[in-house]
Length: 487
Image 1 (cartoon, rainbow, N blue to C red):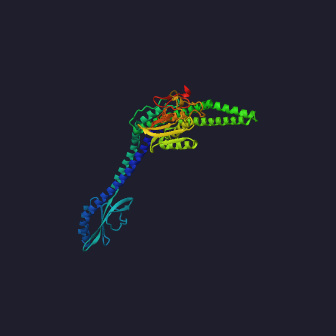
Image 2 (image 1 turned 90 degrees about the vertical axis):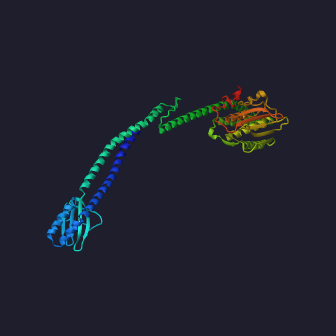
Image 3 (image 1 turned 60 degrees about the vertical axis):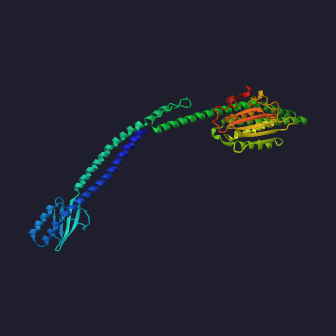
């Protein structure tokens, strides 16, 4: 059932009920007013005929028949439209006009009018005591409720007719108004019915209708469709990342797996291999296993960075993150000298896990490639703020990075001549810098060596639109890009 029809039926049923309820209240008020007016009339007539009633009782008590007849006629003439009954102390009754039958028992005298029923009719009766020096009695005045009942019946019929007339009129009026009010909703329904987010990129245009509820519903639909588009895009990115991960893993894992397979074949074919040769094969197996494990971990981190959502970003203390990375590096490389200079309270809007990965890989790269000629590793980590940016700087005292190689070191699977790593450590650094709307550069360290410097905006920013570090070319800032695979 349409909303307009529901509203029309609801109003068509509710309005007659309200009319009947109001009519019932009106009947009660009219009845009370009519009864009050009748009672006031009885009191006025009783006051008017009381002197004649006393004169009648006085003449009756004095045994004057002629005077009694005269006083009785005068009494009945003064009563006009009410019935009068005078009851003497000796039981003498004088009555005239409309009144209940003589057999009806009247109540004792009361302060106000009372209702008496006789012959299927209701009467209002008012008693007044009559006392004198030589007489006593009671004056009763009566009035039928026929007129009151007639007026109440007229009012009741009018209320019922009004309710019966109000039902269709109010229902039709409400239905017409509801149809007009829901017409924008119908147009919105027709526009939305033709949308299929799976096959079309068309979306609801913003056309205010002036009806708040309809405009809010349209805004909600646009929000739902936008979220659908966003989730569909994220799902496509996740699928692409999974495909890229599979392709990259298959390509890069082939060499270590083949090497491991070759060494296993050697050990299997030569169970009595000489101990020096056997130790060399086992060392080769350990290196390939470590390389394989490191490669899988790095590929996982790349894919994780590609899929991180904006709600994972929060206010992060960069000095605290760098301190934790330095402490962990000192445990892993107890022979190295690693220093940290970081002020307290320097924060950025970022992803904690990504910032920690950035610091770990910068320090790990310095420990792996920044040793001096004697094999000693000295790494200086500095965290500071400059020009509204947070800066992470890692210096080593190794051979440095030639200017021609300073962009290529961030490429995927780019390894040095004697590197045993995965070739993804600095790629992860570039990825995290780009995710945080920052930039990473390679410079010469004072006194020789390499300086890796990452600048991040303190207030963060929106995530970049395309983040496929497993396959695509990703731009980390406006002037620097890192292509894939050395292309």
